[in-house]
Amino acid sequence: MADVEMTTESTVYVTYIASTREKIWAALTSSEFTRQFFFGRAVESDWKQGSSWKLTRPEGGTDVFGEVRIADPPNKLVLSWNVDGPPEFKNLPECIVTYELEPVGSDVVRLTMTEAHPTPIPKHLLEGGRRGWPMILSGLKSLVETGKPLPMPVPQPPKEKP
Image 1 (cartoon, rainbow, N blue to C red):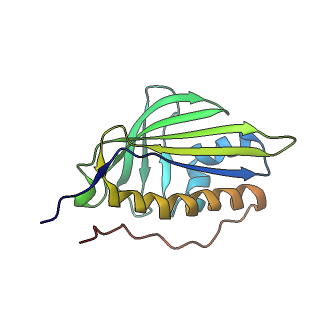
Image 2: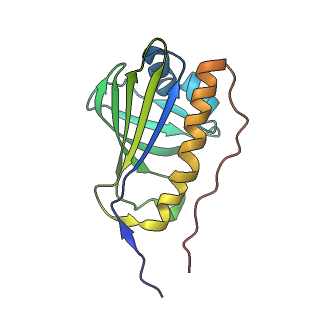
């Protein structure tokens, strides 16, 4: 069996959205919105620092859970991110997902989303986020700007390369 390459590499995604920070914050923290751009998933929390949060599948069951590390509406949201999905992902170390919303001119917001891995993970798993996050963030942008979600398929988990 080949050795698995490990990494603590972070991934950063930046998108510009013609909207306000308040509307984008609401889209990130409301199940009404997340169901439309996060592959049918509903997000649940009271969004206070130290509170728990979770992401549930349309048919029920938790996909992801964690703790709200920083909640500074409408500027910054930092979440610990623990996968509770397929068995091969259940024992992964938590990662940290950060959303930063910065005004850029009038009614434009720069949304910077970072997926950080303080503890090493198998490098091939980064590919799942690299496929999924751009779809999620593009869906959020479309929904906030037009009121309509993108009809996106659910990405499949990456497989380890031999």
